Each structure stands twice: as structure tokens, then as C-alpha cells.
Amino acid sequence: METRQLFGRKQIYTDVETITAENVVEVLRQALNDHMVNQGEIEYLWNYYRGKTPILQKTKEVRESINHKICVNRANEIVTFKRGYGFGEPIQYISRGTNDDISDEIAELNEQMFLAGKQAEDSALAEWLYVCGLGMRMALPGRDAAEPVHVYTLDPRHSFVVRYNGLGEPVVMGVKTILRRDGHTKVHSVYTKDMYFEIENESIVKAEPHVLGMVPIFEYPANRARLGAFEVVLPLLDAMNEVESNRLDDVEQFVNSFLALLGGTIDEETA
Image 1 (tube, rainbow, N blue to C red):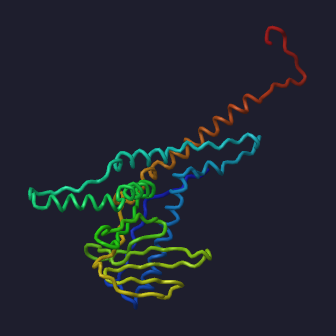
Image 2: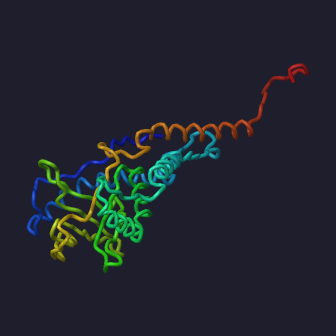
């Protein structure tokens, strides 16, 4: 059984400072090449967190019928502990200054985040953050004053941001991808600070301006290396699964063992 070597997710860059209808398809094509590497690693870590580990591929050459595959899912335990410890209570906004005039506005902001269900979204974001080292969020205006904002947690396997490869590395593009029901057509929703594009089969099928003044897709790295919480101990986790599986194999093989003597006898004292 071989442990997969992972070293954090790759940041996606472009040399294009301003995304336009003329260059968005080419920038997206280049970014998807990097994203696909991240996507494969995130998929592996997500499955590992769910219990789909390499031990399930364990084989035996001798007594193949006795082949236990025990997954001691410490990866799930690590993520659950960290998420509960850091995001068990709702995040509350407070003022850093001493100006009491804005206390009502701060209270209103907390109320709006409650109405938007931000606590549940924060918990979902933390789950991705600790599993694969990246959390993706999208915020869009609501329908009216009673619901001014919508907060969404995106799947980092199907969303990413692209940064300009220059000073400050600002985000110039955010991408969310969906798969049509036909199972093979992908539609990429691309946001810049002032435009929205829908790209299908490397063609722009929709282009319209928006008034947000920013890219509404946000990336939250767990750390500078973009490592998940259990990623650095994958060899240890695989070893634990292998030890427990082999130990149970040994127990069952011992219980089912028998002693045969060919051409010999056992005296009463030895017996």
C-alpha cells in the first residue's frame, strides 16, 4: 500500500492584469490546467475524510479469504475537532474603536448575518478548510432590505480564484463551474470586478456588467502552504489502518489455525 504524497494546493496566477471579453476564455483555459491539479488532490482528501482510504485496496497473496480492511478514520476526527473548536459558536462582529454611534449598525450587521444563515455557512467553510486547505465563499446581494445579502459556501473542487501575478497579487477573476445534466457539458460562471461571463465549450454565451465593484468569490487558505489539517500525517494514518487490518488478520488466522504432525508422535508429557 502506497501513501499519496501531497504538499498543499497550488495558487492560480495569470499575467493578465485586466480581464476582458477578448482574453477571458484564454485566461480561463490556462487557469483550469492548474485548477485540475488542485481538484484531483481535493477529491482525494475529501474521499479520505469520508473513509475512502488506500486500505480498502489491500490484497493478500496467502489465505486471501482472511483480508480485513479496517479504516481508523482519524482524518474525520481531526477535522471535526478543529471545526468544532474554532467554529462552534457564531462569529460576532464588534467595533475596534470607542465610537458608540456605530453600535446600532454593528448590531444590525450581526442580525443580518444571522438571517443570512452565516453560522451554518461558516461551519461548512471550515469543513473544506480543514479537509483540503482551501475554503471558497460567494456573497451576492439579496432581494430586498429584509434580506440584503446571500452567503454561499462553494465546493473548492468546482470553484477557484485567479490572481494577477504582480505586486499585491489582487484577485482578477473568480470562477464557479457546474456540470449539466447531460454529464459532460461544463458551464463556467466567471466574475470580474465589473463583468459576469458564462463560458461553455470555450465560447462566451453570456456577458453582462454587474455593479458589485469587486469579485464576489473569495478564497480562504488555511495557511500559506494551503495544507489540510490531516494532510501532513497521511503516512501515519495509512500506517495505522494497515497495522489494525493486519492485526485482525493475524487474530483470525491464529483462531483458525491447526497443528498437523506428519511422521511423528507426541508423548503425554508434551501434550
